[in-house]
Image 1: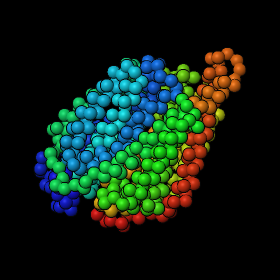
Image 2 (image 1 turned 90 degrees about the vertical axis):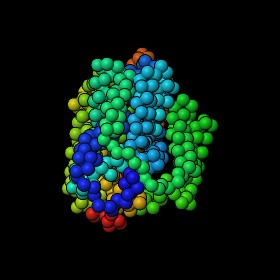
Image 3 (image 1 turned 135 degrees about the vertical axis):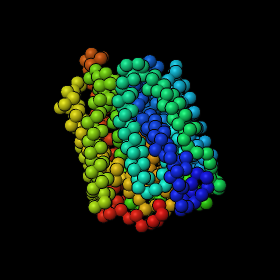
Image 4 (image 1 turned 30 degrees about the vertical axis):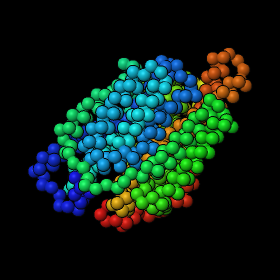
Length: 494
């Protein structure tokens, strides 16, 4: 249905209507909303070393400003999409923008670690409202197939480049103004987008909607939080600690209960037929594992470049550009040419292997590395691999779904990516800090040199584990995905 309850199959509105005349301006506003949401996944990465120095939190806790945002975003996306259905796209966008801007202002003004993490989690919660509302508004704004294809191409480019732009903008703001402006900048973006939504996005809400699956939300969200918390708690306690083990076990129990409930629920948050489909399930697993490896790597490499190699925040952001460029090249080739001919099975496992090889190159990082010889090759190889993973996996995860499942399938893609990123960051940071601590205690020599060597050792161990996640992704995707053109016949109206 459209935002006012009309069926999607209704004749397209006249292009002389106010909504249609302003549709490209609407795209600009919705693109800004999506860019802001995607940008905040990474914008604080480059700022973390200076935020850590200003707020005096430990290396063991450094993942939480990243994990707090990604976990809240991923765990609440399905709820956010349902709220957009209830409130209407315009209302959801307005509430999301105001909440996101306020949370960003609070985070920028943070005087403690707890205040920063809480603000980032609230940001993620409101991002979970914004992302599906913006996508739904775009869908109801562009009704002609040719124009809709162009609009989605532009929107997808903004969404895909958000993480890369976040690294550059975060580095520039941190170096030239303050790390706090990596959060304050969202107030500016939010105000501009707010004015645009008020002026361009029409009112309206659907005539009917399914009831909220509250048990599913509590079971799924609670399970995800407890698993991530268990991984993170192992840094400051141990893997055998009662709180760590209790969180992990209870989290797994809740997730198993979530799956069982989804099978019984009349209005499930995640219809299991989406995940049970072999190609879609394999694609979602690939997105989960690749995001788990990627999010952690960006954290360790950022700290390595800034703290050990003495890079400025801006230079660190620019250092990632070759990876982004390589990713864009292989993603474009895979999407435009290869996927339609060979399907996802040859592409995704190949990309996983390439990314794993790139991460293995990072395991050879010395105490002080030359960028061209020690860092650049790994970045390019990892980028080439990620482009072959993300583009085909996202296309395969949403191909051929029935119209009634289109929203849930799209939300599942974002959920698996964000939750994979938050779990991977927590797990890999725990491994890195634990390995680094052991290396420091058993090392010899001056304290400063021993600390630097222990940090590199911890990072190297984490890179090996991240490479293992990509190898596991290669095995899983090779087993589940299928070769040949994607099957789009499930629902011609999708």
